[in-house]
Image 1 (cartoon, helix red, strand yellow):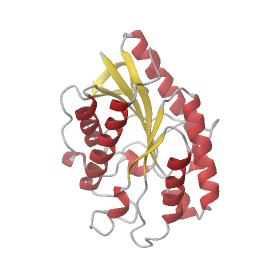
Image 2 (cartoon, rainbow, N blue to C red):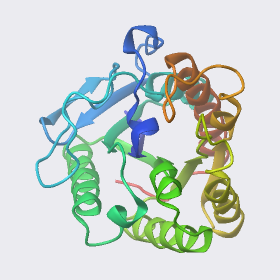
Image 3 (cartoon, rainbow, N blue to C red):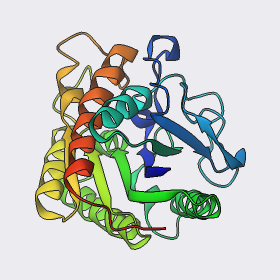
Image 4 (cartoon, rainbow, N blue to C red):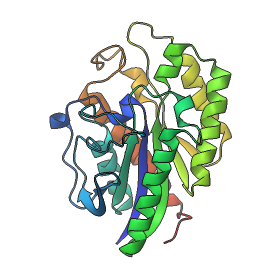
Length: 254
């Protein structure tokens, strides 16, 4: 088997606060979850709620919070483009700030450990790795805190560089949306994300749909989205990611 490894990371709208019952069924053979924390010796067909039990005390830990995400729609759309299965690793934490993802932090160390465990596993099973990537969606909490755009951009770029230093080929960025009651609050972070995708090699903007959902009535509260919204973002971002992975051969060969 040849597969693409993708880390799904960020804060709550990556973790998913939707309704897993309304997520699409994952296509047969399209994706497997590598559960680095709870089942590190096997692959499990990906289902929603993705990553719900992947909680590590001292690292990424949010029991019961993952209720339905973009992952199922994402892997279906990506698989339709590449024809290769995805090995997906969950490492997302609601409310997390970019400061908490910097190198040497507990979250970063946990993510690195999950990634390395996955690489070791696929090597032991003689699974060929076509490419590796991180799917990232984060920034709302930093905007709520009032962090300056320049600081957010600097810290995000430092984090992305650290992720690439682990051997991750590409970063597939999903732009954050808008606060329901204060729609301009997240604009500086959105702008920073646009600039990062323009300036950093191997960082690709894959979806801007979240910012359209406030006006479409697809928000469930001030910060989070209905499952329909997660499905739409996952479909767009997954298709774009699949296009990139089809065009470019991966650098990682195991």
